Length: 234
Image (cartoon, rainbow, N blue to C red; front, top):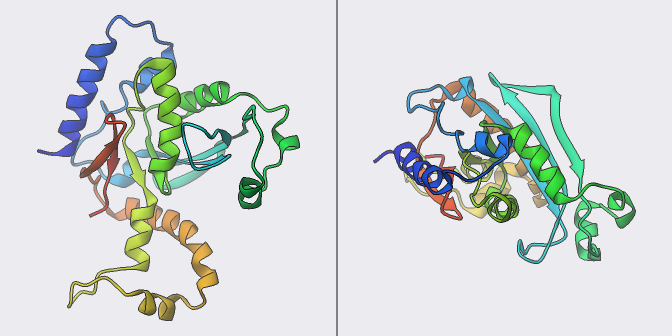
């Protein structure tokens, strides 16, 4: 059974469960995020929001978001005039170990809005577009915890993880042996391991290339909090 059909079945169940619940317009609109999608649509013709979070740590139940940024891709082009970018006040201490990674210090977020305010603004910005992230399950957990607490449902947008694209660029399957490229071969191709920092940007570039040549992939690799569908690159 196509995963789009499964996703829509889940979505109908969510809508039925929330029938009669008083929801703000941006939350109500998110419930319709699957309505415009079809199995034979060209990937390039769809709209995407590529996003990233910075946090105080790796535990979604204990740690907090420090920043949320995103840009929109329409017809295969990044809309530079339509971006989302906001620092977030975590209302707690930022560990030094986290500061060393993202460089966000307490003085930068002291006057920033709360995550609740920023998340609601982001949901309005996102609309019904397909959500794209790198190692996206991690970021989604922070968003969906808020969504569940505030609106009693997880994001209904389809989600694409650029990490899986990156894996296929860096560790492709050999056309004859059907075996994945070994780490040693990868070092030969890429050079010094310092260049691993290039993996994430390369994944997003590959995402743009994929859109220009592919139909929408509708293979479900498992939901996040059972209601958000993540697409898998075959």
